Image (cartoon, rainbow, N blue to C red):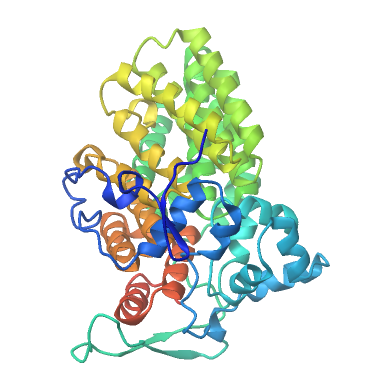
Length: 500
């Protein structure tokens, strides 16, 4: 396809206005998203829009020159933001900054900015960076967390804002910081023991088991992760002894419940940043699904397996397993009924995310289109078999896929179309706000990113306080923002219990 022509102005090639993210046809914001996905288009982000255009045109050289995540040249990097873990890993691999830059196809100064904390690798750089450093994507994300200050307490001085004198605001924000983890993560050592070395537990009747699984599923979708971990620690040791007392159709039903229970366990470990243990939980879920003889249970267990593989960096394997399982469900059920159609669509959506992480745009879009047809066929937003699948859920995943490929402006436009009143599951709604926050951060619109984070915290506090990924997003935003916005981000981090 020929590259679209633009008018060259100075050093920036301006694309046709109709193709710019901020000059698209105006759309009515969904209820509740108006203040976050703002219809206003400030004029101070022209470089960021040009950068996004150049990325779409495939100009890697210019995509490095115009980096929207980079701190302006006049700002000096904060020594506290230095990514020492990233530097140690690079040197341990015997790589100089020049050699690593050569492998990634970027300039050496880009590597220097990543390591100094003044810039963050874009999503499309991270898979190659992880491979060069010999780590998984999750481990790579951990390396990109800025090192905390060595002092016991830190005074953060807000920089002067470009928008006004700011005399009316408190210019000094105090936070206590230590070398320990800043996240308010639920205690989960007992959950690991319950999964790996379960102690003797009481035998549950099928009804008791069903009630317990329903409670843990409900708590998970409500982002009450402390309740989830406590209930899982009680239920997981009871699985084997309880199933031993069942037979016939009751045993099959018990295996279906165990499939769902281990699915939740895997999801929790992924939320807490432990994909290795999540893979083990996913394997247990698949084992019980196979014993149940229920094709829908097999599809739901394949979904958590796909997610765990993706989190471990095995994106192509995740796509293969997800799509094969979806095809098998189609063959065995004909996708008759809401349960089968929802399990099918949810599995495709997870596969599309994995394909996007593998940087396979064609496959990701093809799978998304198939999931969209499943959503249209279902014709409602439901929660059959705890999938939360429906047309609105497809829209959310379109935002995530677009964001993975760097289309921050397009992701915002897609998010504006989502009817928030139809996103009734708290975990999904909070995830949407986090995606919006990530998009605005990539786009250099830090104030709007902070607004989205505030909405996520209000929707589901533990989705922010208990997830390392959310903490990393806030840390990145604090490192990138300037002036009044930076002070507000620091204050928000303190409110959320996240130490910078």
